[in-house]
Structures are given as structure tokens and as C-alpha cells.
Amino acid sequence: MENRLMSAALRDVCFSEKNERVVPFPLAGQVNTVRRCASELENIHGDAALQYWKTECRALAENLRALGCTDDAISQQVMAFQTEVQVEMMRRYSDRLAAEAEVGYRLP
Image (cartoon, rainbow, N blue to C red; front, side, top):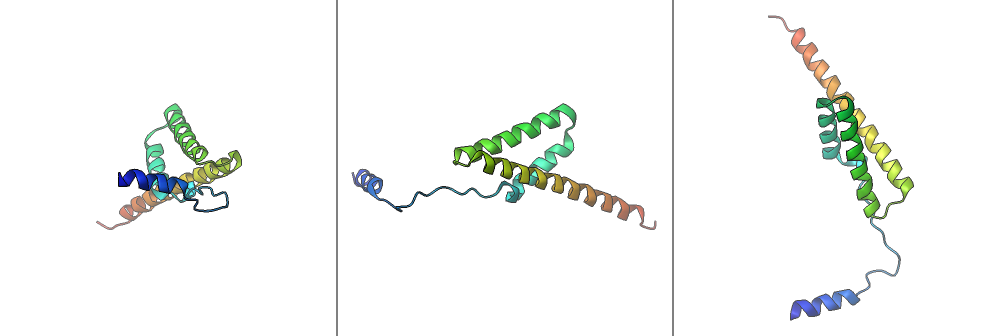
């Protein structure tokens, strides 16, 4: 009974008179998602990579749309995310080249 009363009381509470909106954490700052996508894209190529990429970006865009983001904000967020994934892929490639060079220059 107490839970039902509490729920009714909370429904009537106005937390703010201003219209509030959710501000999503920037996609480009979601490091785990950036790294996961970069890792996946390293292992697939061609049409499979393109399909994976489109699916990921569309899902991210839909999540932002569900939060009430405008189309312009979604576009900016997805573009910044795509840039971060490309930077991560370049970093990973550079790290592999450096590791290979290090091994190659060692004396037996």
C-alpha cells in the first residue's frame, strides 16, 4: 500500500518548471564503443565491413533520436564518432607497425 501511495505522490511532483531534456554523452567520447568498432572493422572487409558500419551508425543514431536529439545533433555526433573510430584504427595500426619494427631491429 505504501508503494502505491509513494508512486502517486511522485507522479504529482514537479521537479522543475523549465522544460528539461536529456543531454547524451557524446558518442565520440564513448571509448569502449569506439574501440569495439575499430576492432571489428580490422577483422572484416568489403561489403561485410560496410554493412557492419552502417548498422552500428544507424543504431547509434536511433538511440540519440530516442533521447530526443535533433537530426543536426545526431549527424554531428555520428560524424564525430566516425572520426574517432578512424583515429583509433590508425592508432592501432601504428602501434602494430612500431611493435613489428621493434622486433625487427633487435639483435639476435
